[in-house]
Image 1 (spheres, helix red, strand yellow):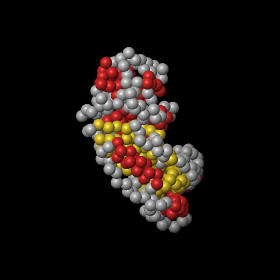
Image 2 (cartoon, helix red, strand yellow; image 1 turned 60 degrees about the vertical axis):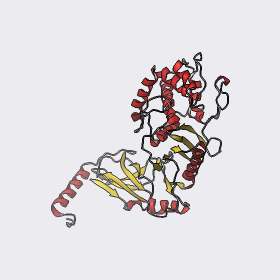
Image 3 (cartoon, helix red, strand yellow; image 1 turned 180 degrees about the horizontal axis):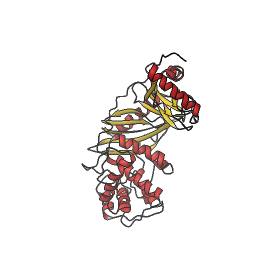
Image 4 (tube, helix red, strand yellow; image 1 turned 90 degrees about the vertical axis):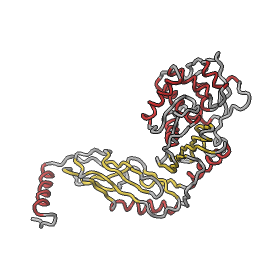
Length: 395
């Protein structure tokens, strides 16, 4: 039987969340100029903004994050090392002549994987991407097909790839949600390489005739920005996958369709400021705090406490003074034995203007299976309820 408990949540929703709300100042909806945007708070796994976030769009150079991910996976698997060198094909070298971003590779070069990572991240080198694709899969076409097959298994639901660099192609598409979640993956799965995204300059063999700087406009602002990737084509407009960390919070976001690099920089900074200033992070329950109780069937005790496994943190939009709802949901009574730490319920939290949050709740303590007397008493109760009704007099 599905149980929904709200009456046990008074300490959480009344005292703790209520206090948190009084400390918040006022959240305003942010109307972005981007044609599509997706903003995500990594600390609480909360989607803060979704404007056409699942629509597959031309990603331009932002899709280089997938090429980088594939190379990071090859490093993790031991298929290559940072010292591994790849040849530069005519096709890769011609990417420089074709226009767009480059790290100025020549066919006589044998760049290392480490150099190519810097060339893709900092210089946004299309030539570097082709070298990596051919080095890992033989051809760029085979590499693009491999990325498309890999995408769903890492949570990218709206992504197809036709090349390694984001060069315009009608079959090369990614959603802003996919790009932001790919950014999240690079941060969490590859912390040893992620700091490269915050480096501001790389000039391979001092060949860059002018600008060899990282194009991410947020890195120089001192707001905690440390990645990830810009993109621009005439079809896509100006876009950015960015990440900013302030205090205990980190956000990652993807925007596209801006009219200029100046507008992209301004919009990215505004979104970052909005995400941190208009939401308050509150710890509403410590790990192990009893939230509610669940009924137990044939156990040594008739109930078991339900607790969060880790500290429960919520983002509270400013000016939300009421309307926060929480309830415990579980299927029960829960059959004994029950192990301490076993997930047996969920806490559903609904905060106005944010997606529903589902938090696992675990057993507070072990509950052993009851002995003969427990089973006899349970059977007697069931007989009484079935034949005499719940209000039958006691014998």
